[in-house]
Image (tube, rainbow, N blue to C red; front, side, top):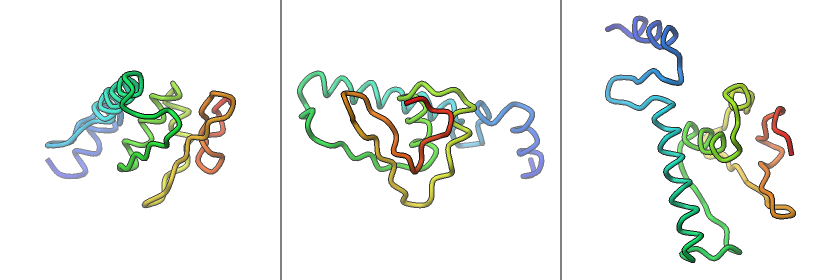
Length: 113
């Protein structure tokens, strides 16, 4: 298939579920982010991480955005309103009164605090 044919097929099927040849769909990455988050919570519950310590996650833009979508239970339109992340950009989850929020720099406008 040509690139044009592939992009038309992706538009027809939807960006979330289209899987490029030898690649992942957004839904695949969302599932991977969910598994990672479950593992992270389990390790914290089992005492493998001190709850007062910070955790640094380094990954690519799509994973970070879908991780945030999963963590905050965003809908697709909320995810789509998130500004594109620059290369090597930092997204910080800030804990206040026991609740994490996304820093104002990257927070989508539809997120409730």
